Length: 483
Ligand SMILES: Cc1cc2nc3c(=O)[nH]c(=O)nc-3n(C[C@H](O)[C@H](O)[C@H](O)COP(=O)(O)OP(=O)(O)OC[C@H]3O[C@@H](n4cnc5c(N)ncnc54)[C@H](O)[C@@H]3O)c2cc1C
Image (cartoon, rainbow, N blue to C red; front, side, top):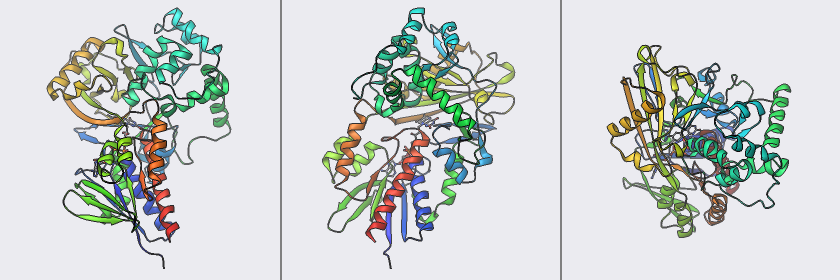
């Protein structure tokens, strides 16, 4: 008779919740006596995923969508029976703009990630100077880098496409994902596909064109998104906001296995007993055969303070930045801007406070009542974190000043919502993958401990879901191998 095995999961963000669900499913399918307890410090599950509804508005405080090219979020939604709740972005108004010399300029068509793949729109755009365009075209002839070592994202783009591509494309577009500094960000950890394209094709543009052909062939041969998925746009969401995903996940979990509103304080490894001793802030303690820590890296470091000093140091070295989102709604009949697109991003050199603005009620259906429009602005990030500390009133005014200057919006908002995310966005600086290798090396001394979540192997919701699934599989394998 196999003995009962217990896993403690720390953190009820998307990573921890997925780990719990996957573990529960593995135990059920294999009829294995593996159980879990998930502990979340906040009174609410979901972590960075937070949706508010108010008078017909659906307001996302954190993520508002997930990329469909990474299949894990789509697959999870289907698995949870959310197919009819999924929705894509507006197919009629797909333009994205970049602020350039104070004006909103359309991103040239044919841009894949950052790489131009069509000549005419590139020649026609006002975004780059003639010399800048020429420099981008030189990507065809610039030889590939010989060594495969990591470099910064800005360094890479500068080397292949030139300085204008760094300032006017890479920095503002990627700041939107990582809220980071492109000069510091690791290419290998954030966009390994760029390294691969350079090595395989000797040019980013040639590589992207080859990739586009592959994608078209795949669609023609029927190898697309997971079976049963609705027609996907690049970004997908749920009609009632991403919290629907959290609610659906939580409803499938054993409710007795959830401890909410209690902080984990310490994890101790009892090597003689091969168990973990987990102490909570409310004074309770519990033991487990395995631990999945899906808490932020700096929290996990503190939890392990008495367990492994080297691991603690490595975890503390993963930097985080703070951001805020500010949502503003207006009456449609008084609103003069056409909101003809998904929104815009703001290069640093423009000297504005906002990093980006999503025209939410155009980009997604079901976000605002018919007679209202909704916008969402991003503030903070690397080098601009002081803005996150402003009072709510000052933050709203700062955002409104920028919208007045950029979009000529002078109308009074009928609703404003501010969400502050302190130390919320983990950064992957150059060498991040070496840091993960050091971490994995230390973890060999702590069998049954798994560290997952946005701090490590992908910050987006799909990557967090993949990491949650993988942690459950690894924990399950580890426990069932013990008998
Ligand atoms: C403003 C913003 C916008 C974003 N937009 C997008 C987007 O559009 N698309 C996308 O794919 N991604 C987006 N992201 C990224 C994505 O939302 C996150 O990376 C992801 O949700 C993180 O999930 P996680 O479970 O790893 O961490 P978290 O959501 O941070 O969960 C960790 C959990 O651990 C809990 N915890 C902390 N300490 C303890 C403790 N001591 N004991 C117990 N529990 C503890 C926390 O309360 C939290 O609930 C965005 C992020 C932000 C901040």
